[in-house]
Image 1 (tube, rainbow, N blue to C red):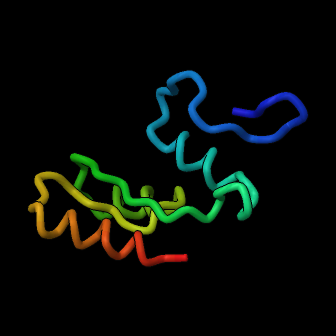
Image 2: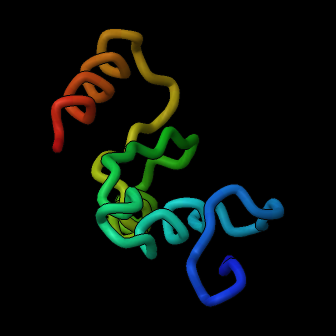
Length: 82
């Protein structure tokens, strides 16, 4: 989704595409948050699902169910990224 002037925006109307928010985020300039680390928590577990999620711009694909230590570990790793 783009704002007036062509600048991508985050948080627009809901999309049927679950990758839309990360694609919008990655379209931003780095100084506007385009390199923000992100993980995708999903119920899909196949290798093609993982490839799709990582290809969309997430750093991690976390399949449900997930243990709290695993989830917290991923969040901690992402929090350390610049």
